[in-house]
Length: 453
Length: 177
Figure 1: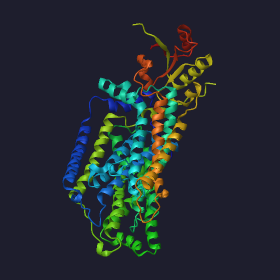
Figure 2: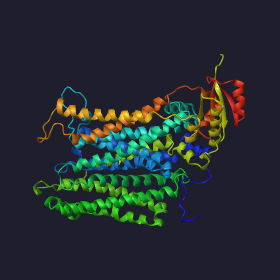
Figure 3: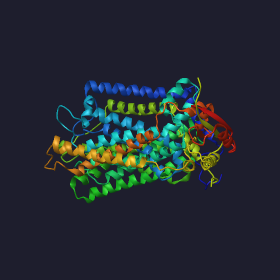
Figure 4: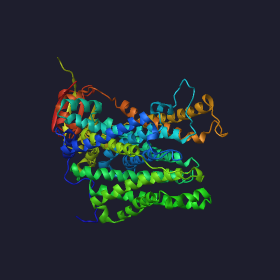
């Protein structure tokens, strides 16, 4: 094959029926692969670890975590921002790339959207439990109550409640609407009665009528148009949690765009981390081709450079502000107690991804997988550095303090990774991981010649 | 039990044939019909006689309702029900209310897009006659169907069947109601 030609979005030779059968057979297969049990089992153990950690947290209080004055926010907010950011790539792929008519999105949007949902679920765990008394978390919502109090709408933390809950709701609806025609396919193809009943109920009687498709396409396009500003607003609001405060290192206007770029960066890294093993295990190289991996690598390279620009501007403005405390922030990051984390963050997020300039790296699946893991780590470190360095050394040196995570910090984090993977395994087994109907419409035989007048 | 007739259904192999057949059926004067395909075909909707979707208007209204009620909620809570003086800032500090207003707009619009789409399509629909044709299960896989319904004024079991046979279908079957 000509190396200068981009590889196709779908390998040639597929028909409506073979695409349908190939994707739906993964779900409808009677025998669950052994590897699935192994993977799900390991992930499930970590879910149990999460349950133990959260139960112990409820018994003892958030003192079991390492955060204490002056570092009141540490792992939980780092992980919250990290997970939310990961989720954003799913929305970007399904909504923004749809509006930009990027056809290659089709084979990765379904599981990227699922990834969004599960990442938001993991993110939600942290603020919910960090409030200390999670059984009262509904106090965050505006509802008429006998205490006669209402939320403080001038606080970015309340904006966050609205942004994240709207994001979770819209992502769920977008994902479900995309699933309806495929659920109908599963209903029609399932061999078991249980499958027909369950998928049938979820498909809600979808029959593929031309009138329905018309409304459906309109709704899907409108949802994409609504999800696009939503995804930008969500991470903007997340960055407001920091930027609205007056803490040195947080109080900057670069935060919203730089957080959004960072979210997309880490999200694409996570999509690659997941897509590469999934396509190998399920033999989907014909649908998730080298073209997809290369395109995702290019998006990563671009957003990585934007993030690098963000770091530069952050340091420049700190110096240019003339504010003693702001000027101290970058110096503290580079030479202070968290300097190893800071330099590893620069190495992970800025240095390593430069390899993606080379086509040989972009076409090397193993290298891409390794880079995506490095970027995931780097983006986690970025949030850690932003949150902890600013809090640990702010204005008065008499109120400085150090933060170090405890076992329970780590176990909760590992537990949410387990929750994420366990949900993903369930999704792979019970729902089509690639949008079947959109794949059909991408095939050459789906083209209608203008023979009707 | 005597079964009533829902209509006649022709099965086609490829999207082009279905679009052509639908256009011919419309030219022949049939109106009460529906075409079924495993993926959206823009030309098909046009061939059936395009109607503009009312969905965008519903979404606009939903978005406006979300926007206004989101702002009013904050105004009412911060100015009327529970005014809190934060550093002398005005109770109606509207710039700080924009993020929540925006999120409520998106939420209202998205909910009306999804619920509106389902409502306009009459979903969920637990029963529909077309599923009585066993081969219709392929409509979600690789086959394309045109169903002319018995309630069409021009419908005549024999004449319509003969007409459908001229369109080159794989098979024409009767659909029980």
